[in-house]
Image 1 (cartoon, one colour):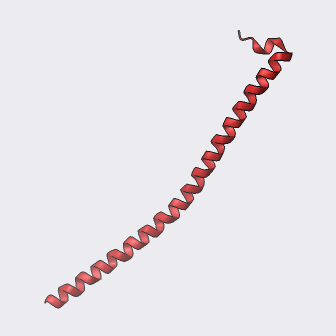
Image 2 (cartoon, rainbow, N blue to C red):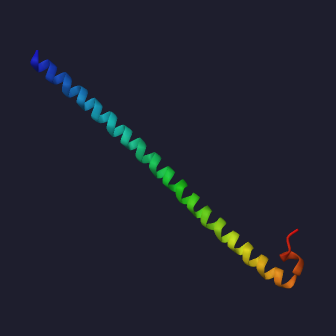
Image 3 (cartoon, rainbow, N blue to C red):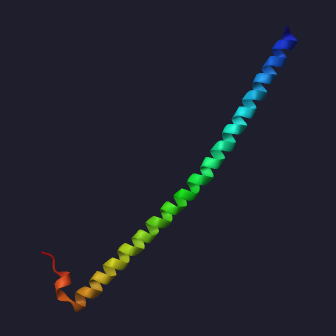
Length: 73
């Protein structure tokens, strides 16, 4: 009886190990996908910040040549 319990425990443990390996593999795939998306988000944010700075500089520059641009109602 002891041998049977030992064998069934080993089978359960090996099944659990394979399940954990499968889960880790799946999580690694998700991590790489989300890491790529996160990098794109950071790049997008950086581009938006550059665009805002460009618009501010353009507004200041244009307001020197066209006085009505600098005024707000």
